[in-house]
Image (tube, rainbow, N blue to C red; front, side, top):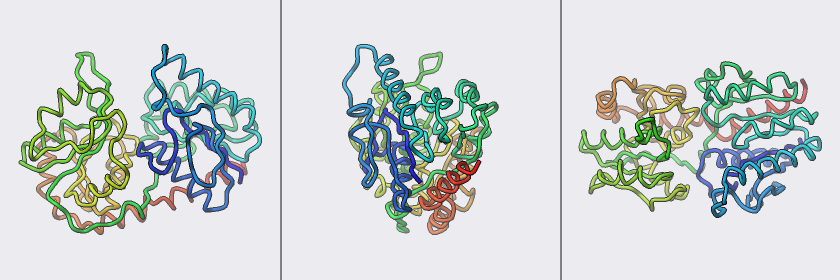
Length: 366
């Protein structure tokens, strides 16, 4: 099949990128190419996927471009340009697979195309997003994919065609049975604040720190820091010989994939102490692929990805630090190989690629 992947402009696509959405796109495209499909990517000029053709919208990603006088106008101008390019070339392909951030921009030209458009929704389906996506339910060539059943439940108005889990490169996230004595937390320090002006901490770094302090555990932290004040206020004061921040403090993920893999492989447990409704959470199957169990709050897709008592522990949020401590106390009961087998069976790259390929074929027949 001739497949057009409409990428995001916020970040480029290449083998080194660590953010979840572009990483998933790279892995999916690479897998589809191996199956003999012809892939074209509409996105940033500096995106690189060996074997895929790139049609550039902008020279480089928003995250790499300098400041604009009016960022909102600049970003929406480029997104509009992308949609208009899609309108011109979309009918030259068998399938358009839309991954753009935000997902709905390209759907504004969907009624001008005969080619089916499959949109993977990568973000939490808020009431606002649900409302806008539902505006395209009536279009016969528009199909939506959720990335977990928990994710799908948030779509009250939008018609979800299918749920397809993201996949993990099990060759990169290799199994490692020997564990060191540290916990690992990897995530984003969001700049979002509540009405009181406090950082909302959707990824739950505060919980990870509190657990380490209450149990006198070694804890390694890393991730992208959207707002330096968050780091200075809520993380830095707690750093010590036992609680360490790995890598520079940066708005982009400071660690390479290989560095992340090493940290995951040797961790006693990966902490998914989230405060928000996680649509999927790629770090969970990545950790389990390495043989590392997950301790996470039962929010979003956590209970779908983690088998409670077998590949980690799913803690009810109301149990708070008490529940996290109990899970950590029992973490040695989890067998690393059970974690690995769970990912191989349910969350491999091969399975993700196969599921999307089958979905393309189904859509073409309708």
